[in-house]
Every structure is written in C-alpha cells, then in structure tokens.
Length: 543
Image (tube, rainbow, N blue to C red; front, side, top):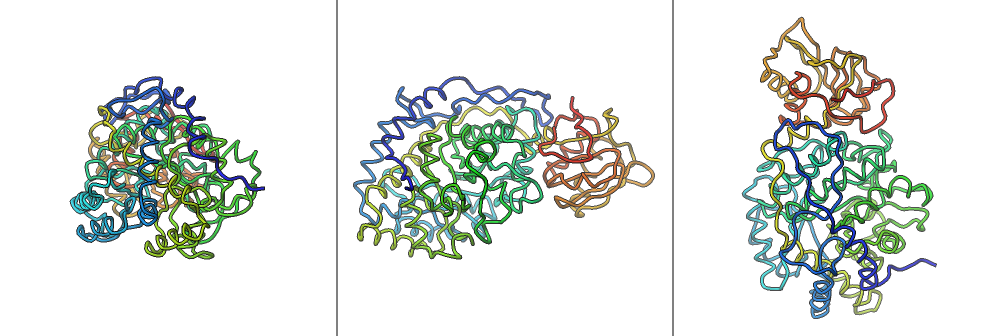
C-alpha cells in the first residue's frame, strides 16, 4: 500500500531533536580577499548566521517556532478555498510590467513568482518588479516570495547587477568550504538587494558525468559526501544573506540519463543504492536545516514509478525518513516530463494530493487555480491538505521576512575568489608559474580568449608566439592538445587531451578567467581538487 505523508504537526514534533542539533555553533570566519588563503577546513554545519530577532527552544530544524507554525495554520484555514489555492502557486513572470505583476499577485492571491526572460534583463527592472509583487501581496499578513533560478555557470538568469559565478562544480573543487559559504552569502546579498527572497539553488545532485545529460557541472561532483558538504555550505551561505535556498532536485537528477525538460526520466536503482549515493546530500541538508526542497520529475521505480513531484511515496520518504519540515516545491510543472501526460490542472492537483506545498510554473495559472478549487469542492483534494500546504508557504514567507543578514565574510569580486579557490591544476611538475610569457591562446570563444589574456596581462604575461600555448575547451567533452589545456565547463574532455598542464575553472566570464589567470601565473597557489574522476589526468596540484 502506498504511504501518505504523515500530518505536519506530527512531523514537526519529530523534528525537534534536529532543531536542537542544528542550534549549535557559529559562522566560520572566511578570508575577504579575492585570493583567499588555502584551507582544507569543512564548513561548520550549524544553524545559519541570519536568524529572526527572537526565538524559543521549540523550533524546527530550519528556524521557525512551533507557535509560528500554528499561526500560519490558523491563517491558512481562514482563507477561502480560492485564496488558499493561490497561496500555493508560483507562476513564471516574463515581463517588465510592474503594474501587471502587482495585479496578478493581488487578483490570484499568489504565493509569489519566479522571474524569467524580460523580467530579469536589468537590475532596476528586477527591483521594480519585486516591489510591485510585494505591493500586490498588500496587507494579507505574509509577503510574496520573489524567486529566481540563479545557480551560476550555465544557469544564471540575472545578467545585470550581480557577479557571474562559475558553475557549482567550482565550489565542489574548492577545499575551503567556509569560503564557499561566504561566496554564496555574497551572492545572496546581491540577490536580496534586488528584492529576491528565494533562489532555486544549490544543486544537491551527484553527477555521473557525461552520461548525465543536464546536470554535469551544475553538480558539485561525483562523490556523495563531498557534494553534501558543498551543498550545505552554499545553503547556509544563502540563509546568512536572508535568502531562502531550495535544495534540488530530490531525490537526485545527476544519475539519470534523460532530461526531464524533455521526457520522464526513470530511476531504476534500488532504494539502498540511492541512499548510498543520490540521497546523501539531501539527508545532510535536511538535518542541518534546509528550508525548501525541490521535488524532481523523476520516476523512481522503488516508489512505484510516478514522477517524484507527483508521488506520495517520495514526499513520505522526504518527511518521514529524512525528517523534513520545510516547504516541498515541485520542479517546473511546464516541463516535458509532466506536460506529456498531464494538463496544468491535473498535475497541480496530483502534486498537492501527493504532498507538495508549492507548485512551480504550471503551464496555466488560471487552469491550475480553478482545478485546485474544484478538487476541494469535489473532495478529491482535502481542504486540510490544501491548508497544510498553504500554511507551510505562509510560514516560509514570514520566516524569511524576519531573517537578519549576517555580517559579510567575503567581499569584493567573490566570483574571482571562488574561481581561484576552485581552479584545479594538474601537472607532472607542480612548480608555479604554469605559464611563461609570451602565451598564445586558442580554442573557446573569442570572449573567453580575451578574458584569459586580460587576466594574464594583469600579471605581466604578454600574448604572442613562441612561448606557452594554451588551448581552451568550450564544451564538457572536447579534448585538445597544447602546453596548457583548459576546461571551462565540465572537465571530462581533459581525459582525452594531451598537455603539460591540465586545468579546469568550471565557468566562463571575466571573473572566472581572472581567477584562473591568478593560478596559472603563480599569484595564487593551486587549491582545487578534482571534483569528479578523470582517467589519464594527473592528480591535482594543491598547496
């Protein structure tokens, strides 16, 4: 018989021990220099530094009190069915029209929005939209959740008003997880300054490499424990900045070979195997205090074969086995894994019945809202379950609004700091510098070559013929031959390359390549370790 998730009250009571465990410790100190001192320290897995002004001993693992939870339940139960339905919906908003967004939030009583496309092109547009959304929330008693999909690397919706981070694999390569926490707190502060309150990051998936079609360098690596430590560091960093992180994509998208944007991936591994690999980072993040977990559209055969986002057994495992008491948000409901077999109304109702609290990006907001109201009226979705979901969203929004940001530990060009710390260099001779003037640079895009040249020039290394040759791989799997071969995204192409020096920076952009230049020129000692297994590549040079 398929299990249903137990009631929220029982789950919350069971989480008190986790709340006590997470309440110990302080935020670790981190160097504020773009070229941090190397360290092998692990981040302190403690309660985030940002916290409400007051608290009681009876708190959930992620921060709110049981009294706050009961208040949220009372608020939700006082809503009309239509208002409660709106309170669990988070559609995409793609326009630069603030008045329209204000009306959308107000008219549909929405939980909030996720910004895309034209809505994210300019920093002032984002800030204006965030203010408009909060105005739409009005005096209802909880703020709107303004979200973004800003991981770094290839998944970065904001291009203005924020530093461009390398992919999360750079954080996985960095040994100093206190630095990682500080970097993601710095990014969180930039997001918060624009009015963003939720970031759908970090990625907790453990990648299997090139057979993984969509995660790859979005993952911190291929070792579950290492991925867990990096995920927790980034998660705590976001909360230090008073931004809600969403740990994704439960129970792990890195080990399936189908992209859920296109079709439904099937996970055939046993639950025991998943618990040894994919689930490790999620278990750790929940224990430390994850406030939000994103449910993927992956069909786990051990749970019956439905997409996890619509599967009661997936939610039961998350809450009963892992002890999660925060908001369970679906991955985008407009993805092919869902839309191939279900309309927006059906998918939204199924997700709520299964245990979801927040429905992300239904293909039609109106259709989803009407279907939820109809399901309550017809008895196929209980009002109690809808109220539970709405109450969790309300609790999260109120908790976020009460967070006090922690003092910065990383300032300046934090993307360069992460790139320098995570840049991985391997060579038979690890003596720096790894390049000598002049250098010739080929491969990649022209912007890549120009950015690396500028970074090297800052160290007095000229561009010309007759010195060190550098070849840049612009894809995850392309191999090359030069004195120095550089992988900018995933590092797997290094396995087929021929070089004196193998290097990976896991990202693009001026800051990332300036960080790599710091290491190649010998200004910063190499610190990164290979986050994934690579055949025929030497061990990383580390200080």
